Image (cartoon, rainbow, N blue to C red):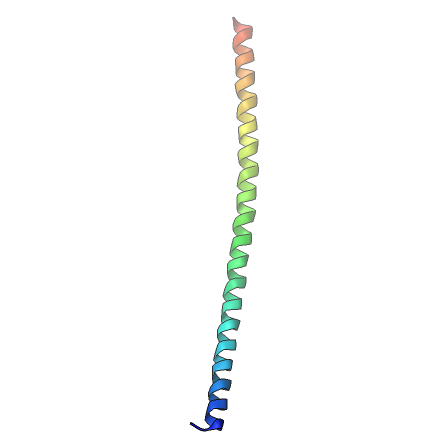
Amino acid sequence: MGVTERVWSALTSMIKLEDKVTRQNEAIKAQQAKIENLTERIIRLEAQFELLAGAAMVKKVTGRTREKQRD
């Protein structure tokens, strides 16, 4: 194997590696966007849950107060 062939092989390998890195980078960017979207959704769900839990507590306390007033 001559020097030219080894240099050509090294260049070819480097180009293939660069392509793989570029494709992996694109995949990581897409995955990051999905993660950010899911994070936003979880934040909204947590906010809704906290509001509903708070409303349930108010309703429970209000219901107990009304029961005591009836007695």
